[in-house]
Image 1 (cartoon, helix red, strand yellow):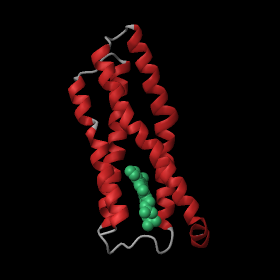
Image 2 (image 1 turned 180 degrees about the vertical axis):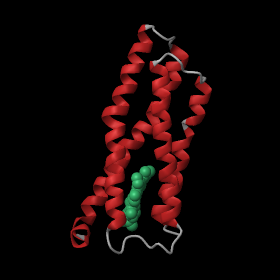
Image 3 (image 1 turned 120 degrees about the vertical axis):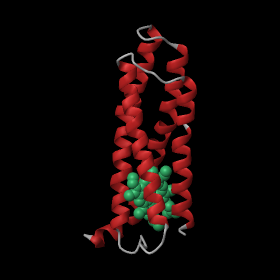
Length: 149
Ligand code: HEM
């Protein structure tokens, strides 16, 4: 099994990076949609309907599958012999960043359901501020995995 993982390593890493890119695109874009959804529509109008379709499709068909793929290929890399040195700090800081990102994904899912019920309570500014969460997590993750401190 570990022999296969070693053989597949470059492919696993390539697929990991591809799925990270598509997941992150959604994590950056969905909060922006929430900003305009809040500021440019009222519950029940035609724009509310369009924003709901865009948010649903982005989450369901792009973000959910790419989050699952990122985790799957990431765990395969983790299990590949000789890749992770558990005596270093970087695997733990990377995991902390990944957990924040995964939490944020689920937080966005809950906010989407509030829009569906017409019960969004947050302002556009609050959605803009939450938009910084994936940026901060990305900085921690990329520094961890590239500098390997
Ligand atoms: C979801 C859980 C994740 C796990 C279990 C995981 C695990 C790993 C592991 C073990 C490696 C191999 C490091 C190496 O080859 O030396 C790796 C590479 C990488 N990961 Fe992740 N990762 C996850 C999510 C993410 C996320 C969310 C990002 C970006 C925001 C990311 C970005 C990268 C990058 C850019 C590399 C390539 C680094 C290099 O080879 O220089 N990963 N990941």
